Image (cartoon, rainbow over all chains, first blue to last red; front, side, top):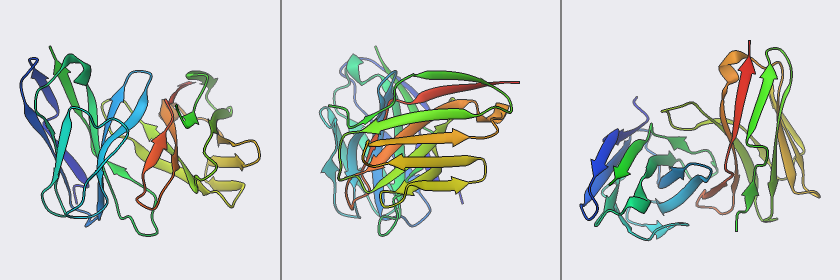
Length: 113
Length: 112
């Protein structure tokens, strides 16, 4: 049982390049989330998926797109990376109903030059 | 505007003493409050939570207190251990989709 896994662990992009961050969970959770963590800013929600087939914007969605590929996988795409998207990205999952706890992956450290 | 606020970004405490972390919130619709612990290069891990209808929850060395009238909660760690050195995030749930609002975090350093 690996929990929440994220790939890659590190990535360096040039401005304007695109990439997809992958996230998978093996806990049969309904809900999945993407956060970014910046120094002094805490964790901010980018997008979330309450259940398979649905996605919604969070607090800071601009410049990102998401895909809930199936119940296990939730990917985050940067179409045209900008230096302001340099951050650590965390994926999380939650059982949803009657549960409030979220389980986090180890993070992807992204640098955009 | 930040709905969950953690001031005093860092705290140093001697091993064996009490660590107290504070958190204030603005949204009276939050129904659960959580504390997460984060080590460097790892994802946050759930530590303890409290329902908005309670005023105290205890789990081993960790106790969370909630004062709804003041919109304030605190995390007490007694006794503090070197392994408690980490960043602690306060979070609050604001809807049935389990969306959480996080504070900026507090760095705790426990000195052996």
